[in-house]
Length: 364
Image (tube, rainbow, N blue to C red):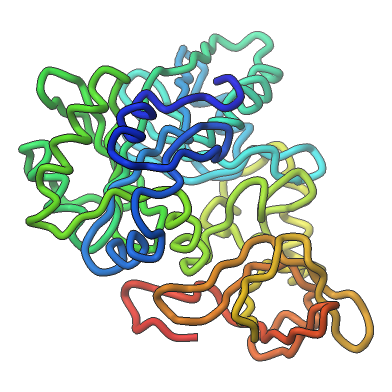
């Protein structure tokens, strides 16, 4: 997918008052109304997002599952069609090349990642195809994400279907208005979440049908500015901010992307060494910042006169009414409650992640 890929709905969104922005290499809505209002709609009822900044590809062929099992950090061998998992593809040094959502289907694996990482992911996987019968092909599918406590009934009403019970990353094929769709259970906000994957021609039909249900479910169309504050509250790391080629999964707390029972995969030795040691030197943590304005990514943290960390993402939380940040800090100052400061003199306190959980009272 080329740089600054334009969502198939971009012109339609603009006609509806959206402000476009570039996010993960795609031009998508940054906001429709006030980002804080969009954020609160997702926490209270439901929000609808254009996820064209996510891209998909397929791995298929006789040896595809065997090859994928040797390469990614999670166990895909245990998956049946209709199930999925989260994983990373690592370098031999254990650093994160890409993070992936992997979906087992009857004819192969459907793989979902950021639009600006798809080509990198496909090339990284192709490097290991030697005598294997494996094909890797991009898919022209785009996602619309329904997020929030009312996401499920909104989606069911939109597509005129009754969903079965679904766990995270479960998925199923369906149809809407003559367009093939795939429904995926996936949260990107800390709330119950679903995605509808559809070709470019069907996007407006699904989006319009969902917006037609908006008054019943108090749904708002939402942009990536609200998505950022939602995922920060939920402690969800983002590639390019918290994840990258200088990070190993344990530093980012990506336990859900790892299997310690599947055997060898690329980078496994480094991950296992870090686990057996019992700690990593750097850890992704939350920060409560004692300031009205959010710090900028890259701002340094100090303690005892020494540099001990760096901010990766931040926001003023509409849910909690506090200034929050995600940051990598030295393990010796990573316990919740540890006092830190910025070079500017602004103070902060380490907090456990996530800041917000839908199954618990939001507290920090």
